[in-house]
Image 1 (cartoon, rainbow, N blue to C red):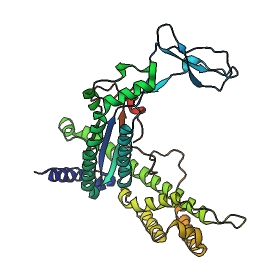
Image 2: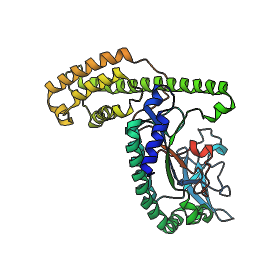
Image 3: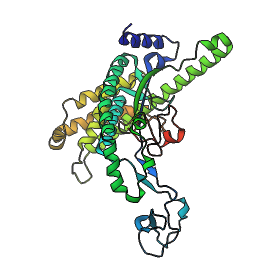
Length: 377
């Protein structure tokens, strides 16, 4: 069986699970990216002065004279008017500052943005995306291409690792420590990209243990899916309402009769939402589908220059979006805390970076602290 056939078989197997509607229409895809961190805490043998009788802005750091044992003194300039316990401050240094690593970060950002346009963040686990079943083969194909494209970038970084170390040694001076830089083969293990389909169905093995327990867990799973469907529906509606309200406000003239500027980035956000809604409508929200279709008609052929110069067109567009807004206002409830953040610049693919420089050593388990401090892709 080919790899593509294996993927299709897995899709069909997951899709056949007796779940609530959400899981009948979507599959969870987990994407995990790993790379070494760029910063590390300054070693404890570097002296931090507790007091300094000098005027200066709070929190500014400068190099003081070398201590008797060698390392440079890093002294916070403390404003006497501000009372701060100096023991609560921590100093970090950049151990990796190079274009090769930045290029990998930017590449990972492209992966994140792709997943945001094709799927929705799930409430089950960080880095798990709900993907429409019909889109899974394409998503898997694209992620494989991204995985292949990432490897040469990592190889370039590793090839220049020793040169990068030398450059950082010059930049860091007395704060450079050789132990901050593991051998290149260890650093290589700190890079990885993986993705797989995830099933949150109750394992069939549980049924062999207890049919009653299986039924109980199955019901809980369905309840979670129902709750997720409601959250996704509400979040998509709120996100769309925010974009539409902003459009109406920008298309409405000021009290003094002057036109407001409809910035291109605002227009693009609205266009992106409309363009990606079909892929992300795993809650099968028919009412929203109709409103988004109307918005798509209104936005057909729109460009920033037309919005800027054609007042009649602005008025027609405003009138159309006012109708969309009126319907949305009856559909959207005020949500004080959203579990789903749907702006295309917000939700990251799960990324594991070391919370303490390069000290990863290829360990398969990433500490919770490192996950919490992970940089956005």
